[in-house]
Image (cartoon, rainbow, N blue to C red; front, top):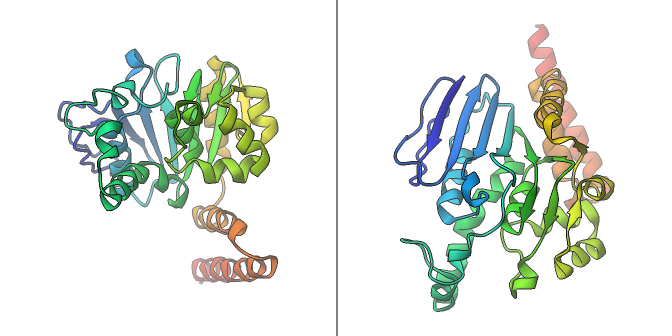
Length: 278
């Protein structure tokens, strides 16, 4: 297994056994590769893995550098909390080299849009990737932390998990690509209730609502994720990838359009099998 850090600059080369820019690792994101599995770890437990633009650049770099041979990406975090949300310094004084929310209020519409789009890149690639992405979440996942967990294809939670979309309680809206997967998981009415109230969603409710696929004890969290990974890797890679993209696009297609997409995907699979047998 290779084990590396993504620096604040975010340069990465994630080939098996490769390295990334070790730098000063201010972003606090650790990336490791073990064959077809890449693990991305939020590694700032001292501040409960609070979210910063440096973290988002590092995560975006992982996505843009992901080896095509990687079949599963696991997102996890060190410490008691997955992520306590946005670093509070962003609200007032700002972080050195980064705009505060007050600074952003003075941006032009174009500057503001570009900046938020830059941040959203860290959250967008998890579902568009060919790899299956799994968030293993323990403790608190608040605001930006909750949205990061929602970015993955699949969420597995520990029984101590507490999820909350706190942005509305702070006078903001969730803007890190989390609203779409939340609505797709729980429906409009429940998503509105969760966001507008900012309330806590525990492990059992997360599974019941479809936010998470499984809940387990904290000591068993890694083992439960590995169990899922084993089941995914047991199927041919091309079939899993085609199925992921087929399902991901289903919500935006009519019933007949989805059937056409199924036919096209199956045509590609049968062609691949025929080539392998020839």
